[in-house]
Image 1 (cartoon, helix red, strand yellow):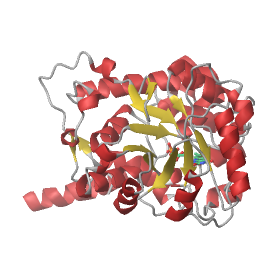
Image 2: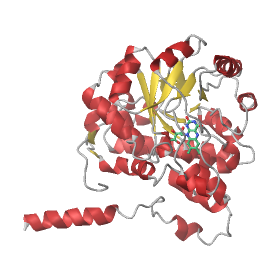
Image 3: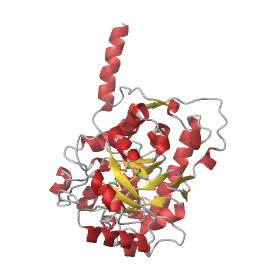
Image 4: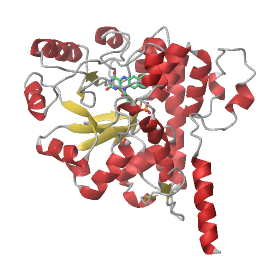
Length: 383
Ligand SMILES: Cc1cc2nc3c(=O)[nH]c(=O)nc-3n(C[C@H](O)[C@H](O)[C@H](O)COP(=O)(O)O)c2cc1C
């Protein structure tokens, strides 16, 4: 009997996990399905980050939405980034005084103060979501007091984005770099003059991204050339600027350990939102690998991560591995369809979810979170 039950559970698990749903069924279409085509639902009626995806899908021209939504090839890595969080269940502790949990949301990133342990990941082409392009992203980040990392392939230039920057606001600048030192130095100077406090060098895109969905609509990768990116190259470019250069796109414990040896100021686990190479692991899996094989990395260096984060509990799971701050790309690009107010609302919704999910998991202080809050044995739910 037990054997039969186990088999049934396995079949049920497999059925429950498929087909993949890009948008969870929480009633969005029931409530907003009768709105005229393209009309945005009222912002104050959006209840979580996935709603911004659904709203943007209804509102934007299909090419624009596809540029944001697409992943590489068959999009297995894109889907896995979303599903992986469901593979590791929480182990909520009870009888814990959690009433001050909100006071532990603020954190520092490379020594700069922010109101929450999450940030806006660098994403190109803000203009595809909003005529004001990146204005809503940088203003929303300022008003919510979180970090924004503009992309070098943003619709606006570094200088144009900086005109919307608040006086004390801290931003980092994402860059792609090649062997042209003169061009790199010019970029470093522009970023520094515009007030960036750190540079984020993307290293996961040495070749073009294989983007089938995007190619169908003519909105492919922004970085189409082969680029020589090596540790020696990193050491070299560091001599060209006094700004710290964070490495974005670390995907193995081996590279995380080399980064520590090379005294990189911070690393950023990312598979580019599943947009570069299909089959690449999710950043949560990479964080778990580091936690298992070299947990000291998390105290030797600041580690950030992004990919598939949509809920407060996702952030909690990443923080539990030792990750210091968590990035979100698409959710903020979709929120920016509503401009500054949309980005602000997304920030508020996520802050609230992190606090209540942490509290319900029995975490009294996010600064003291540890791996024991998650069962790291993968469950069957999405295998
Ligand atoms: C529309 C879009 C454009 C992006 N452009 C860049 C970019 O120019 N540079 C970069 O380093 N990463 C880029 N990324 C990757 C994001 O920084 C981030 O790693 C990814 O979006 C995280 O996954 P998520 O969208 O599931 O949160 C882009 C992602 C998206 C969705």
